[in-house]
Image (cartoon, helix red, strand yellow):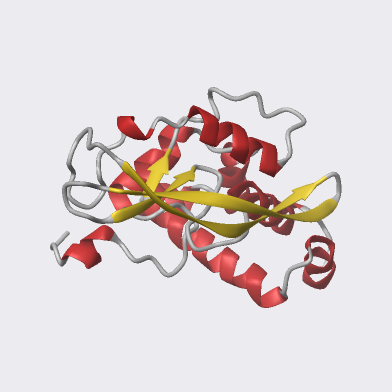
Length: 197
């Protein structure tokens, strides 16, 4: 997969649905600007390979909304691997958008309501909330390092990420970890290529 960061600094996100943000982000992606994430071939002559549909779940105007978006896959002519193009607000292997999860976690830390009410409001299972919470704390520790993680509360860290984290931070996390922030069940490129870290 090829993660595309920096798109949101080019887009005016005010009053756009998650679906509109996705469509506009895909319009400004230039696949020729991205090397193959498997063989590192720069400026490959990408070939459109296929597409697939996936859900994009967002929280808009007080309601959980589900969209179906089409993800385009490209094939690297050098190594033959295919890659999906995913803009920064989509989390690989997850239907929930990054802003949705960050909003739920912010409310978990800052709103004085029960977990059951919070989950009911967002239409998620309690186990989903706790899985996101655990993953968030793990990734926060990786992102900040042990010392800074210790002195930075989760709600303070979330306030720096919302309404949307800067693309430099997301790209930095992806570059150093080889998986996306809040991506669970990471299948990293290192694992795929059996290359030691």
